[in-house]
Image: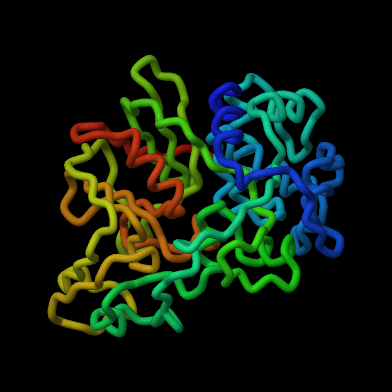
Length: 332
């Protein structure tokens, strides 16, 4: 959870963050910051809603990740909401009750949307013109960087590019010094030590717990596939590698990869395993990031546990060599 004092102190220290509204057609900082609980009849998932955007940001700040903040109550946000309700002894049946909303709002302080001043590091690149669709086409690239400042900024603030653009109409995100509206999700606190990780293969989720069994974090995940299922039982963390080089082993025979020889793909956020690799004791298995945060729990993995880059970094910051990772199956 966000500690209120630490969050307020951090927000004050970062002078570029404020609550000045940034106007966008039908969806702006003010409409999100002032949004009440979603109505009993939930908004259409096809269109971003101020109340859902605020809901997702509050969940993110409480460490119940909705995945990509997009303003739509998709499957991942519903998973996080149900988990938050359960952790707080409340019920959730597709409706956000007054008690649930009050508890969620009380979990952190500060505006849901704040302003951010773009800095040189956000726009200096280098950027890729396009991420190749096939792994073999990635192996000769010097790095798997972002494709634009917009993509980099959206990921920095845990947002979809579409929502970031909607909050900043006409903005190209390529000028240092420009002020933009962003989800206020930066967390200054060092994650608490993780004593145990639980991966639910049925629900496609990952949970972290402390030594007393307290739930520390909840994250949507992509867990295995029919082609290469995730293992059962308990493995252990053996290493944590940030900005990893991806190494393809042809014996895994991944669908769509024709190479019969090993090859490597350079580091970068659009690397197949994202910005961090948490190696597990089962050969070839790990917990890692992804170049496609919008596809988490909606597409298959190559047997590993895939999280958004920012969620993978948070998990990596809490675990250590030897941390057990239990793979379980549950009824939905």
